[in-house]
Length: 248
Image 1 (cartoon, helix red, strand yellow):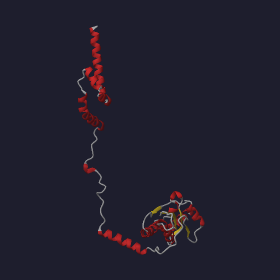
Image 2 (image 1 turned 180 degrees about the vertical axis):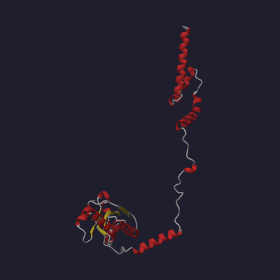
Image 3 (image 1 turned 90 degrees about the horizontal axis):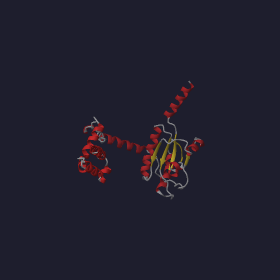
Image 4 (image 1 turned 45 degrees about the horizontal axis):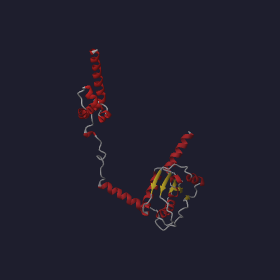
């Protein structure tokens, strides 16, 4: 009988020792005092205070075992996004200023008085010789927008300065359909509607512009304008070459 009791105590001690080791990993056991109670009745030497002190060390050991031979990058092996960024030289600034002045001198867009458009009337223009079908297709979003120019809340003089190179460069890059976002005021003399009125005049002064219409609501409605540009001479030559290749 005494031997049986001794065996039972030994088994209980082994069980409690194993249980305490499991509870060492349990945050719940540490906070509720369950681990200390098990350690006490089981005669386990590890105390909750000792476990709390050793926890960071065990975490570091576990993390080290997890990453194995991985080594951190040295400080000099990290990208510096501003390392190669250089300020423009005086010569570059001078060339840029000269180019802007040259572009401004070539800007033929009129800044004379214009008749203001009714703010709720859509814009539409078709150059002579352009079929109405082209305008209708443009009006219904039949051409994908290849570039955009945003003129919202900008001074009229700045809009004039920005529009000129935008149309010129779009044409030079063989773009056919562009979108200009300008806004629309509710009053006829609101700044947005004044800009819209000038824009209608300016676009018609470009030989490259074949047609323009107010955009669909999803693209800005009366506050934006779709513009169709004619094909450049280079694009026409490329098109003729493709057609000749197809004919053999």
